[in-house]
Structures are given as C-alpha cells and as structure tokens.
Image (cartoon, rainbow, N blue to C red; front, side):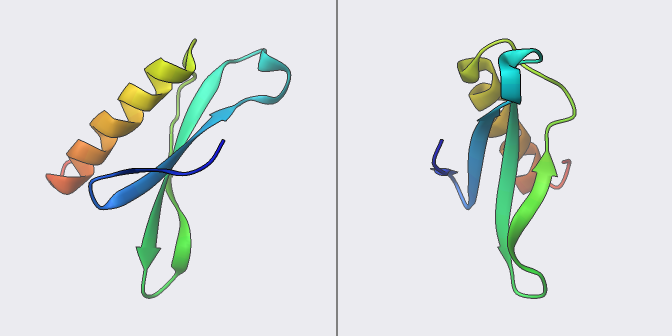
Amino acid sequence: MSLEKYSCYEFKIVNIPGDDYGWIYQIYSDNYMFGYSVIVESDEYFDTEQEARFAAIGHIDLLENGEG
C-alpha cells in the first residue's frame, strides 16, 4: 500500500504477512535530524484496513496536540 497523507503527517496501512494478525499502521515524519522515517508503529493489530486507517488518523490528531 502507498503512503497516505493526513494533516502534516504521512502514514501507511500494512497487512501483516499471512494475514494471521491483521493490519497495523506506520506514521512517518520528515525530521531534519533523522530524515524521512517511521516515527510510530501501532502496537495493536486491527481486523480491517479501515479500522487501522481510522486509528492512524486518531493517533496523528494526538501527536499534533502533544499527546501522542
């Protein structure tokens, strides 16, 4: 899956190989010190791609409010 953009962050929804666990999200940032990299990976698995997408967007909202 390709990167999606929400607000100032980009994220990707990833299917765990074999689909035994489900879906996770990875949030990316372009940090001047570390370059373009994953800054957050979900610590839980989601049953559907859409659930993972909503969770990623919610996590980005938290990051922007200094809570994530």
